[in-house]
Amino acid sequence: MSAETHALGDRSISRAGSLSVMSGNRRYELGTATTVVSQPASINGPWSGRRPWQWLDGWTVGTILMAVLAAVPILAVVYLAFTPTENIWPHLVATVLPGYFATTLILMLGVGIGTLVIGVSTAWLVTMCRFPGRRIFEWGMLLPMAMPAYIIAYVYTDILEFAGPLQKLLRALFGWSGKQDYWFPEIRSVGGAIAMMTLVLYPYVYLLARAAFLEQSVGVFEASRSLGRGPWRSFFTVALPLARPGIVIGLSLVLMETLNDFGTVDFFAVNTFSLGIFDVWMNMNNVSGAAQLASVMLLFVAFLIFSERYARRRQRFYHASSKYQALPNFQLTGGLGLFATAGCLTPVLLGFVLPTLVLLRYTQQHFDPELTREILKHALNSVKLSVMAGTIAVLIAIIMAYSARIKGGRVLLAASRAAAMGYAVPGAVLAVGVMIVLGNLDNGIDAFARRNFGLSTGLIFSGTIAAVTFGYLVRFLALALGAVEASLGKITPNIDGASRSLGRGAFATMRHVHLPLIRASVLTAIMLVFVDCMKELPMTVILRPFNFQTLATFVHQYASDEQLGDAALAALSIVAVGVVPVILLSLTIAKSRPGHRQGD
Image 1 (spheres, rainbow, N blue to C red):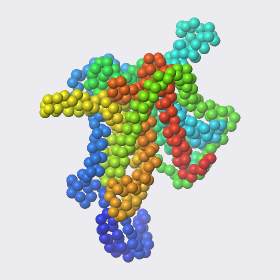
Image 2 (image 1 turned 30 degrees about the vertical axis):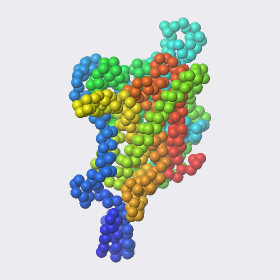
Image 3 (image 1 turned 90 degrees about the vertical axis):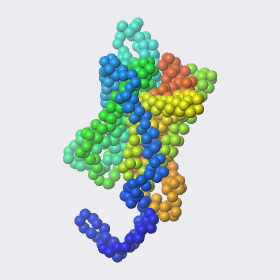
Image 4 (image 1 turned 135 degrees about the vertical axis):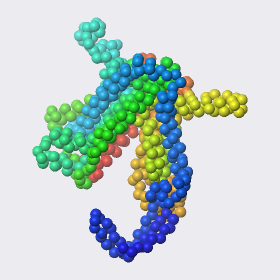
């Protein structure tokens, strides 16, 4: 085929006597054509047609610097663990490390099994079956996600402990006088921690399992049923394997949240790595030992991330058909219907409804105008930090995602992955890293000022709001980056080319074209970061300034002092912040299936 090509900046115009399209080994001639192709100059990567240093423009350098800042706290933990000033690692190995390892492993195993059973089974029932209350459970199953694990732990301890209402009722009914007369499960134990975390973390598995089931083609079920397999056998042999990637991602999030938990294990005195880091740092006053324990936690995280990828390294998951018919909606009547309703109602009742009612009752009983004003002050602190972190995280995410869009290349891809590492790292570990980085920065500034100006600057960043905000950014930047990248990925590159052809540069195109198109995703990203910052406890406890409280630290302090009633209003405020996003997220998932119709 004869062709003539003219290059005009970022565009190329091709004139051809005939246009041919290759399909397999065949060529189809489509007659004469003039094709205008508008693409960024970096379509073949950031080094295409450039000298080696010319790819280092403002977008690329800015993205790399932001990724380095996000990764530095994690690298600092690893570095300090291998270069301790006072090596207590042999002492930790000989005394507490085996206990931390065993307890953490048991906790992860128990929570993983519990969330997997509840999340997958309820997701299948709500997605594929019809039973009483199903439409309510579609969004109701996600409500426990708004309830932090440490708050539900405080509530159930108050209900189930020896002096609580349940055991008082049992002693009154059966005439028991003391604990020697009967056996009752101990809530402040590893088993109690597993139960509390399972009740509030199963929505992660439910959410992604339901999304996976909604995306599956009905054709695979029809093929399975035509081969003589019933609904349940089809579920175990067809639907469950196809949904495995989504389920495993949800389970990985659950296990990471289990590793991150501090409030529950601290209140129940369960010696996990998170609690061990606080103990070694605060009580033993040894940052190096805390960094060494934190490095072991990083090994847990690395194992979670890479084990599933290795397990399915030769497996691929595809949809067998592009046709999306109405889902089967197996009708469950009689006893099966009631069983399905009870199975979905129980985790919602125990994980959200009952704790919320208890907190409302405590709020009414312990209402104090003076304490309410104090809680309002702490709420403003929480909102201020969360809004600041959410806004900055989204701005950074926009710059990084847009830079990767217009520049491409492995360098920016690696930078994005490095910036997103923080979400997979427990808050206690990141807090150690942030304190190491900011402490060294403060010491460096102070030494420079003493040497050159003869004055001491003291601590500028450590123990300030800036330290807390930095920790939040490192931890939750991945949420904002994922939302923005997904939204930008849906915008066709032709829009970039059209804008550039009209004379707009990269920044003007982002401001006037892309930002209006991804506005909804930007707001969603801010909301996600805001909600997680409001609930964050371990990093806030370590990094906050003196005499500075957020709602999370206030609730933890009062509940630890057995004053849950006084902290009930603050706990309710944290829960209320998370409810609306959870409901909106559920509605979005419900409408995600192609061909969805209201009422399906």
